[in-house]
Image (cartoon, rainbow, N blue to C red; front, side, top):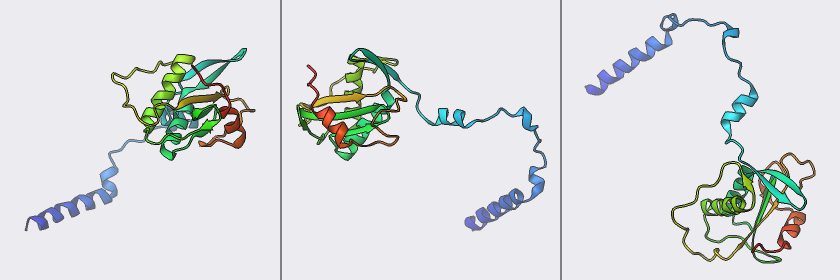
Length: 182
């Protein structure tokens, strides 16, 4: 009996909503009174803001987006890859010089944090990385070296692409033979 009452009330609501009289109280607005919405403003709200960092590379300084590097680190950890790249950032984990090695048990959060701290110490980051209150537990991945190759944001000669991908043989060869950071 209760279900029949509920269904009856629901049908009445649906009938009222389907009739045009329910919408006559709405007021029309002029098109010029509305704030213009551009693709750029929608894009800005749909993505995280860039966290630019300035890194010294030889004699010149390069401006890189830390968010690009975080995406790469997430991709590497979730796909268990030793090397990946995206836009202005190419990252690699290595056991030693010439020995790329994928992380085995490290989560994407841990790898993102590790690379963020790496850049925080070696570059001037716009928004500093907040230190963790406790360290991540020791794992088989704890002794891997972090290696990064960076291009300036918007550099047309950068060998990385617009999608997060596994490193090309050229990028991988360049990163795997870099000296290990102390």
